[in-house]
Image 1: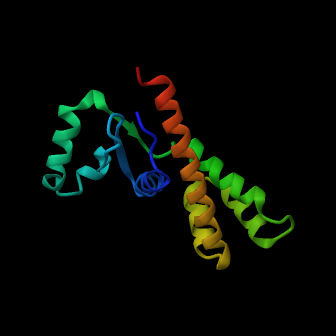
Image 2: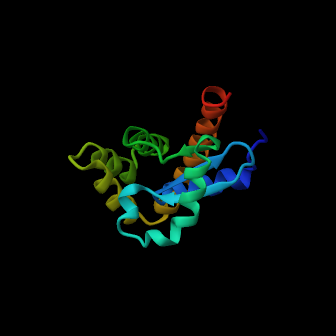
Image 3: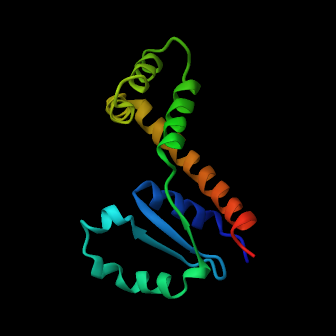
Length: 146
């Protein structure tokens, strides 16, 4: 098994962040990205038939890398907020958003309307997604392969 390149890791991070599931062939490092079952029902599944068939026929060669669960995603938002300078309006605003009933929606609304902090959030989240993918790959190599 050869290591994935940093470009492949970045590609995985970007695709799973957009709601795709990565199917990683552990023998040749081929990556196949498919929509989640939930997204598949809204897409033309014929466009994915060839890739679905490939994964199904070689099921034991592929390992899935899915997006982080909601607990992990929430932790990303908390860590971003924690890193902001104390006593700034945006930090207070985001802490309030994370403590509301629908924290993901509230955080997204506040960050989307925060000017310069919006790009800082995207950069931070992108780095966290890359770290998450690396951790998942390490786990798969350690525990899910022979």
